[in-house]
Image (cartoon, rainbow, N blue to C red; front, side):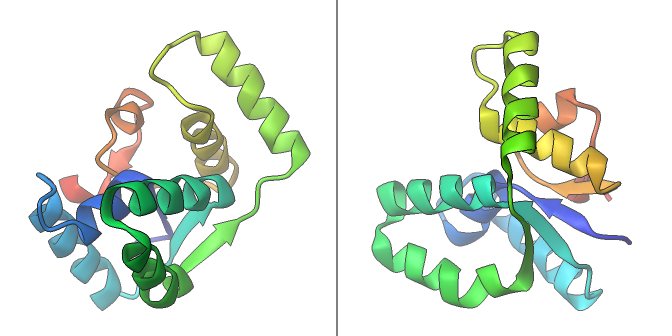
Amino acid sequence: MNRVFIDTSAVLALLNPDDAHHDRARRSFETLRSKEVPLVTTSYVLVETYALLSRRMGLEAVQAFRTTMAPLIEVVWVDEEVHESGLDLLLERNQRRLSLVDVVSFLTIHENRIERVFAFDRHFDQEGFARVSEV
């Protein structure tokens, strides 16, 4: 399996034992690690992840993610061009629940020819991406 894009929804499910997707996330993550599949995300996903972890689980969870999991993930840093393209796509789609983080993720996945996503966010399904949890 080539590189896999990891979304905030997967990280939150993985780190929160009370999350409805926790067991699936843990199994998927263990499989990805055992097969040494490279994980990729964007700097926007990291910002979103840190904010939600802090709010929902506290700064200890932020520190745990930063020291144990973040080093395992290749980060694509969002530049002005990708940001503006993402904003254009967000406005074009005109979907209230779709976020800039989501559409920048979509653009990054396409641009980097990533075939699968590790995510529990329905927007990835709607965009037609194959999820790791379906493998």
